[in-house]
Length: 218
Image 1 (cartoon, rainbow, N blue to C red):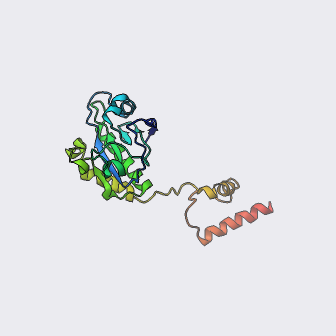
Image 2 (cartoon, rainbow, N blue to C red):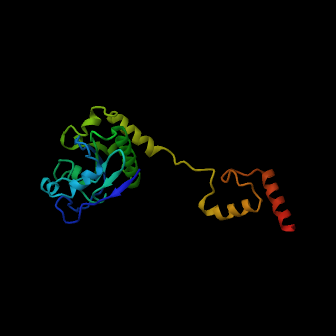
Image 3 (tube, rainbow, N blue to C red):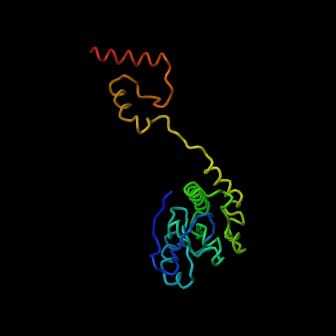
């Protein structure tokens, strides 16, 4: 998941700069089907005078290739259509690209990964991941609401699976704190360099001690 930072400059009227407590995540579709209307194109738009005039902004745009961040998570933005309500003032806004030349499935899956990341980083419960529709009744995210590439319920379930999935611990590599010692005993032939995080049996320990004593005698 590639995240590019391209912030709206401070002082622009579509970057209010007020504190955002990050209580919610609001999901949108860009509803822009133009060819080339990807996340980088929207980053350029948000820095334009047209976006300032429209008083519109959000935190992230997601396409099938990358994610662009436009406003820091701890600042509010104009994306929920509820004025000074909780949508604009207390949520992180995410727009999923709908450009005709993009891969909609990959874009939605990238949005799932981003939402899960933000939920974990800011301790936002999944129950507070909402549609734009939640704030002002607009039929947005339009494609997700229509089941493209899958339903909203599936989107949320995919987020849940990532948030609640236990961390995968690699057992074929030593922990950082043991790496130097592990390499030493492996290079000296005291241990064979496999299964660094497995438990050691008494007989395996005996072999290690034997090899160490033999090496010291030599």
